[in-house]
Image (cartoon, rainbow, N blue to C red; front, side, top):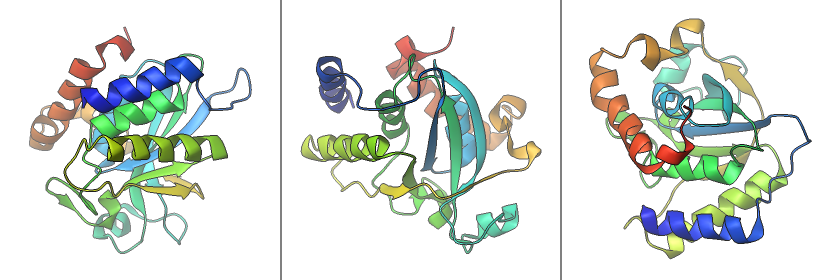
Length: 201
C-alpha cells in the first residue's frame, strides 16, 4: 500500500487539500467498508476524529432495524459517520486510511461478511469530497495496488440512521469476543503500523 500512499500524500502536500469546510466546524464523513464495528474501531483511534457513530445509509427506506440491515434486503450499507476536525486530519487522509484498512475490490463482502450491507462505499457530503474520492480511486487504479478492480461506490449522501447503543463502541466493550479478536484486531493492527503518525496520543 505504500506506493499509492506516497503518491497521493505527496500531491496533497504540493497542492493542499481541496476540501472546503466552514472554519471552526467539523467535517462530516460517511463510509461503508464491511462491518461497522470494524470501521468504528479503526477510525476512533485516528487523530482529528471527534466522534464515530455506527449506523446505516444508502437504502431506500427510513430507519431500518438491525435485523433488516443484517438480512441485506433493506438496501442499506453498514456505515460509520465521522465528525472530523479538518484542521487536524483532511478528508483525503481519512479515505487513505479507509482504503488501507479494507478490501475495496470485493463486491458486497469483506472476508467472511457477505451481502450488500457490507459493500465498499463513500457517501459524499460535498462536491469536494466527491472529487477527492474519485481522484483517490483513479490513483489507486493507475498504480495497480490491487490486481482486481476497485468496486467502491461513490454516491451522494442521503440519510444516516444510527444503530442502537449496544452496537456503538462495540470493539472497545467486547474486545475479547472471537469476532473482535480475529476480524477487527488485524485491521486495528494494520492502522497502528501504517499510520502511527496519525494516531491519537
